[in-house]
Image 1 (cartoon, rainbow, N blue to C red):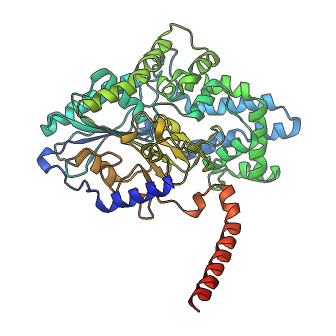
Image 2: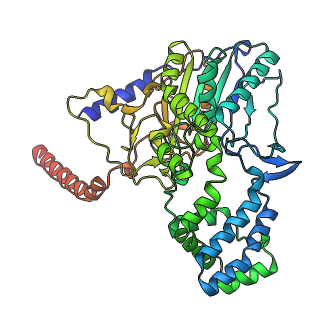
Image 3: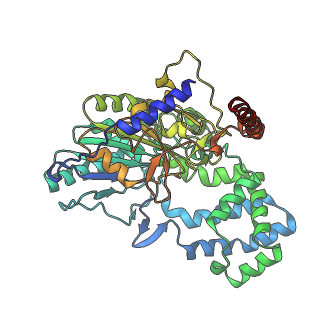
Length: 489
């Protein structure tokens, strides 16, 4: 009954609530600075791209492994083949190496994009901020500070709207922690990775489950064995091995058996020396990851990690709360489509990060069976439960400023929503605009629509009982019809 009442109230509000349609005048609109996600800009050395590795270079690396793979097929020596894989990957990505202090070893490796500054700021223009994802996010935050100051100087404005996507939220958090919100009017975190990414956490801690299913799926997504990129010799070896699927299964077997070899040869010298990548590790996995990677306590790298994990991340929620109280607009977007890659079973995610992390605390389930609310709970609490029964927003740090978008993958957004957040005269909340309630879905046209429950959202037990319920309802209707005819005769 309470749920029915809640639905009726929701319908009434939808019919009567005002829409935030009034926007700030052009002269009052703050420039938008968009902090991009991981790898949004390529890394180049002397004008030659080094990350992502060009397809031709990847093909050469794969071809260089053909003799080693042929030998493995003959002698089944997994360790020898794993060492060859480490050597090939190291040769491919050596320009990306950082030293023990977390500083890029080759200063000639730089971004291929510049952070452009212009006074031309048409409606909705995004000023993209790119950064080197390898370096300490506090270093990237300093560069972001300089970029924001340059934008303000060019436009004559006092503040910017800050939109942070994925890993960009780590950079944005470091910026806010160091420089405050004096020059910021709005903060948007979209698919924020600032609370960690399970895939990266497991990778850094050496606990990544290198099962055949996981490895084969990852290799298939990389399309490393695309016939168009392989040499004639590589194609012959591929055919002799039984085709792509057979080779991928062999590589998956080697990865599983030689997990320690691959971790020591690739994760430790590469990723574990990149403080920027460390910012994607979940808080409860930091100690295990540092121990596994051999980060020396008190070292320069360790101090950088402590500044983020023991400072920036721990202070972020309080900082955002203080900013909001001071008039800064806040919006947090948490997408969900499927369980996160390699995450715990049952956690909804955007394909990469679980909702509980991107939303700063929501409870989620992949089964549509959230615990029922006690009878004494008021309707406000029930309003925090999604129509599909998969999300409970009661644990969110900012429930009135957190939106959930069903059917949207990692970093997929609706630009119109951003504009409403940063430009509407009235600050947007989950109840301020009937177009954007707390629970949204990605529409066919790429724009958000309010999430409505469907039969597919019902729990399996309810779906299983539906035929029986429908049958009984039909019988009841037949009985009532017969009784009506008898009464009216």
